[in-house]
Image 1 (cartoon, rainbow, N blue to C red):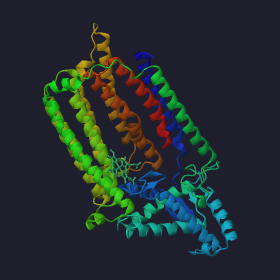
Image 2 (tube, rainbow, N blue to C red; image 1 turned 90 degrees about the vertical axis):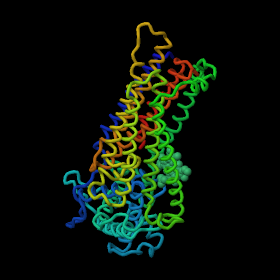
Image 3 (cartoon, helix red, strand yellow; image 1 turned 45 degrees about the vertical axis):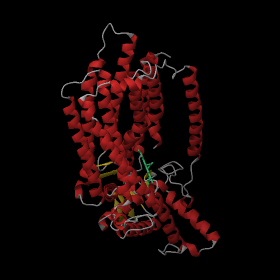
Image 4 (cartoon, helix red, strand yellow; image 1 turned 90 degrees about the horizontal axis):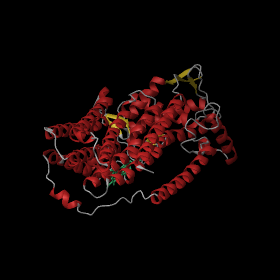
Length: 537
Ligand code: HEM
């Protein structure tokens, strides 16, 4: 296929893939597990929507998603709060039922095996029956569930108040009793959604996730079939790609001699290129701090909440180490991108616009401020020092997008400014002339591809601003994955192949045409796989 066909293929792939994801989101929006207006048992009110949402905010503000997970999303080493709560609910309900409708801890253990099986079946049936009323928006709990709710509240009060070395929870991980109660109600709701059938269907709101046989959660036939089909499809598509790439010689452009390194050495370094050095220096430092935090995470996995230097274990919780481990990675990657694009611009354009170095320095100061501010904010947020400003300045609570909303907006603004800085240098190259040769046109197309990929990097970060402080968990996660998944599985590759291609062509190692072919093919592959693939989250 020619370059033009591949380019059109890349455009169609992007449009179709985004349409699939957005239309899917549109139809899924009213299928989110309902958050009941009130949670009652008989005449007694137990909880309500406000309490559950406050609880979600507590989960966010103390960075608990970086300590554990909900419905499988969050830190992999910590507990899944929904799964843990669901399992506990089952235990308490079994005790309640075993004691003939009386709250009595340990009653279930005293039963015979045959009687235990009866109680198990009764509790699974009771939990899976959906007692949420669409009309009144009320969730009716059975007496056993109401008992379980109270017991799980007591459990979370202890875990987050006194702390628990087993899970690495420091004392006062969640600072006030009210907040601990609210977060317990939130976890109870997530467990309810994970263990109760969707109306009219034979599996739960979370498709029987997490698996827990004691609560009747086993993978549905559909889930198994689709997983199997996906693995087969992956193998089939991989085989096809390998075949097409070699059959049509995608990587066999006419490589030029490896004079390139000499050429690069001989090129003069412009002032803005020199200025870009500090981006790499800071990125390197951030990388070092990041892997130290990774080491600490690995240590905490084995020895939760303790360290050789005692005060570190006492003041540096898992959630802090995990948040920084992820945020530092994003920040040094972002800084490296910025630095690379700034360095590359004069190479590609063959000139440097006036005042470019000052612009680069302003960008550096802005990026550095956001880096320091967001990292400090996360710690202060986790420690509960920011009060109601937690969402804006502290820890927003979503894994990978931990940084407070103000820092997120500033980073978005900084990235746009970065585009402007790079465009100033590279813009003139984008203008074609009627007499340009085919090779020059291909080079220009490659630069356009590169600029577009940089715009995509920034635009997709913007999707993270589409949820707010009180957004439903499922919807917030939908947009969060637009940034995290599409960045990692599509845009990184898109941008990466653009930078590498441009670099290779600028150095004279490959022709613009062969680089373009590879770049477009990569774009097609990462769009059709990465974008709709977001749905698996
Ligand atoms: C010595 C180096 C490193 C060590 C010891 C380390 C250790 C760890 C540990 C223990 C976790 C699990 C945290 C959890 O989910 O509970 C983790 C997660 C993670 N690390 Fe590292 N890490 C290192 C370097 C890196 C580097 C260089 C990067 C990226 C540039 C990175 C990116 C990540 C990411 C993205 C996760 C989250 C995975 C997920 O939740 O799905 N790590 N790391």
